[in-house]
Image (cartoon, rainbow, N blue to C red; front, side, top):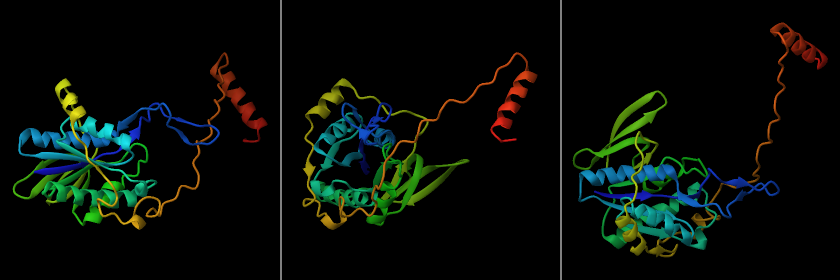
Length: 268
């Protein structure tokens, strides 16, 4: 089985800050990480590979040159080969343009490697945008069946995969033909850690960078030009003031003080 895992390098949102004057994300000094749900998608693919040594896992991302570091991290925990799509034409893409670009990148990798992907996997959403749209939009661009919010995914006979899909009140098992797209949510296990040997191998790995022209990307459908979504305003919600705490000698006195305060404000 040939699996393509699409990942995104994102700022570590646990320590990210907002500039109080510009209301923009302060990325300076903030480490970049593989979006956590994408790491779960890669782990799901690696577990399939653990059971079938013939499985090959390819990693794809769209981003600036520094996104290669995220790809190397993925190579150290199960990926076999990685590709980066990086071009100014693709800059500023919304989810629609990103899905289109990844679909083109997928086709180019198939051409270069002489393979066809049986499954394309995504995290259910990236932690910086939280849209959960890129996986489904890529599936639409490729005209492939898809299951979102996958908890587990396993090959199920010739040309089929079985997916345990997370619901609000439980799970359901679905089966679909390959090639297909699956987005992965947080399962009941954590991604594996790299070994020293795998980290060294990933550091030495050659990661090809593909341009928009390499992938046959239409500039009108990529980047800002291909993005119908526009950010008009970004802001942080106002910090709430602390509430008033009433604690008198007795409950009766506390109730009386609360009544007096509400009466003075015209509430009662």
